[in-house]
Amino acid sequence: MIEIPEAITLSCQINETLRGKKINDVITNQSPHKFAWYYGEPSEYNSKLNGKIIEKAYSYGGFVEISLGDIRLLLGDGVNLRYFDKGQKLPQKHQLLIQFDDYSSLVASIQMYGGIWCFKDGEFDNIYYKLAKEKPSSLSEEFDFKYYKKIISDESLQKKSIKFVLATEQRIPGLGNGILQDILFNAKIHPKRKRSTLSDEEIEGLYYSIKSTLDEMVAKGGRDTEKDLFGCSGGYTTKLSKKTVKEPCKICGNNIIKEAYLGGSIYYCKGCQYY
Image 1 (cartoon, rainbow, N blue to C red):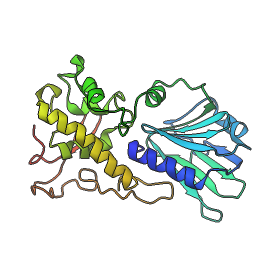
Image 2: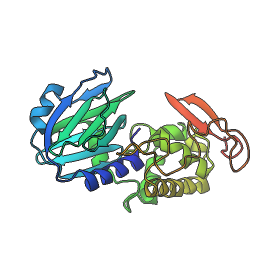
Image 3: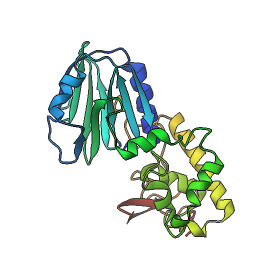
Image 4: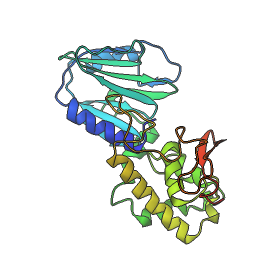
């Protein structure tokens, strides 16, 4: 899933590899997917994109946006994005394939769900996209302790779990359930803890865990559970993920536990994360 570290990594790799490339052909929805979301008719993507030149990619929360003149190509958190050089074997199944005039290709595929939106600049009114562009990045100076404190001090959230507060409704765009696991582990907070039970010290520690954990994830090119533009795993070794479940915690030795919670999975160490 594309969350903050992956969006930043992918946008940087697109800028390094694809800028200046001219689109020669576009194939959309070759493998129909019930939960692949498009803007308008997928069949119109070729006429919108053909002949356009990749100008620049941006990351907004968990979105990757590619600018092509007056057209924007926006990729959401469930999209797997891969670049293939000329002569490399292309996957048979995909939801978007862009071929450039040098015969290299950009391929987007979806397993569970994901958005592949193509639209004129200013035309797309998706609320989560707008919030991601408007709100400060959690890695920016604007996302300071005062800004963070305002989010988690919302009176309506005090009886909610810290997972609900941080990883739902895009209060912090791009901070999803995946990266939340290590943030909470580093802060020694259980994902089911009610917001109201956190001490002032834990609230401050959680803020610095958000900052430091994301810094490390971005610096290492994303998480080892996700792939980059070239199909390589990220360099950040996750502490709590599908890769570590049932393994002993490297700090206390207790096994990492996986549970279903709030429509997804949570991972935690009962010895290190207090509940």
